[in-house]
Length: 411
Ligand code: NAD
Image (tube, rainbow, N blue to C red):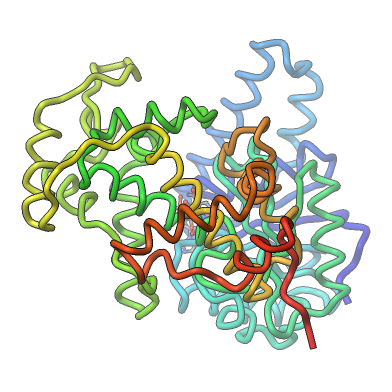
């Protein structure tokens, strides 16, 4: 069973996530070896890690000696075989099932029997990856969030075969490297990204129904989000969510409700967000300030016409209710499915991984605060127009009566 006293760690894939994950180990005093098949990627990761520590030293956050020591704890290699002696290996290679299965099979054969094998996949089936290793009971998902050396949240994803000791080891390791680990079940999107889908779907709906992206962002920022969903899309790249949508469709895992085609229209117009200088807003070079762009109004108008919407006025209250209640509903469904074991876990994920306003306590706590019965009453009015999306989960009905979200009863 997995060792609890991790002394040596390995990370496979030295891209955006792998480099960040490696820094977590180094910062916690654990030696880590970063493996990548591409020497250029290893080179880039080394430069990125050094620049990150340099910036922390320049800002006075880190002493130069400590930065030096942290840097020295990160070794790089092109050979997976160099991970034979690690106590934990985390793979963060491309999001490709066959590739991840191959890495897991090789790590399983290579590493000691008590080494923990983790995948950082954000969309793939943990069981399909774990089953490639000879001992799937020591395999688990450790879903870090970007930037991985900054974000506190860690979804620890248990697979069908994952042993209890493996879950405990992953949680203990997460805490040791300064994360907030939350144990979740294996499903498309796990907890955080699964809920995000409905939230963004309703943000798009509000735009198609008559609001502008800026109006929707302002309403949700007024509620307390640091950034509205369209500003976040521009920052992350509109193509990222768009690609995830099409990957999902390709593998037959499309959500049970229609999602909007607004991002498709943006991608078709090469409006990918800040990286192309234009997304839901326009940006001047070197400046992240959002500027309105009439070209977006034209794209939205065309999309409204195509989807058959007659634009109407939406107030801030309706915009916030649609987006936040979509989170509450999916959270309730996640409790029904046993993917999260408590509503507190769902709130923790949304507070620490998705910028849900701290003062509101998380989507589920917020619903309890304002009264789940009133949330349900509003959801029923939305359901008149759109019954498939606003189908009421059992946990929401129960909570409307009791006032509190409870996990589904287990037999
Ligand atoms: P990336 O493209 O930046 O990096 C992937 C790295 O894997 C590349 O450097 C590539 O050279 C390397 N690689 C590919 N095949 C390899 C092999 N056979 N052996 C060793 N290295 C190999 O990708 P990323 O954004 O860091 O994502 C990595 C994983 O993390 C994916 O599974 C992704 O879904 C997941 N993830 C990403 C994010 C994010 O925001 N980027 C967040 C959470 C999880």
